[in-house]
Image (tube, rainbow, N blue to C red; front, top):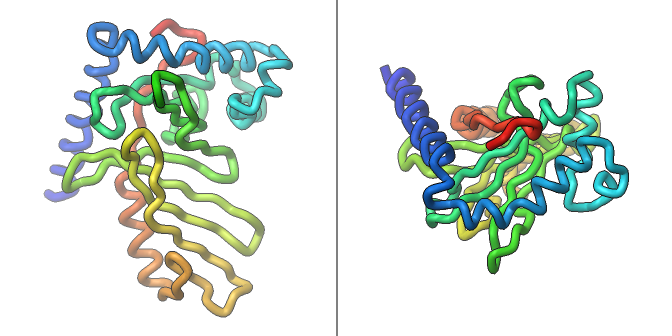
Length: 216
């Protein structure tokens, strides 16, 4: 029953977010226009412009994931506007579309600072970034999991506040270390680590993203 209720809540939250996005032209047009340089950069890079591909603001993993999957990059990568910190100003999220695995993996989150877009969070194939929704409050958060080596994996949980990612907790797994699992630098049991991971992962959500080759 609880799981069913949670699913309904998440569905409603995503529906509200999508409704806000679809009508952004009414209240977000000015802010959305401020993100145009980022979107233009991505479109150029995904279309094959080498200069754009070398720009550090472009996440090369977006192109790599599409090419590896054999999917048109312009169809594989998409974006949308979501007010992640509920301050009335939308953030720009860029990630994989339905053309890829569509598990909600994000490449970038951009926010506006002084009316200019700044990179707030970034994910790549070895450091997956996801949006989450808190079951109790409905607030958006972040979850990231990655691997630094064959023996070490990291898992991070955070929130999005004041236009930036704030990472609050980090789980580290290292099978070559005496303390195999650590939370924020302190040793924890495997059961405790799995409990935390289950909670962090259960809140991940998949926002609809408009492919770069489709109008928003």
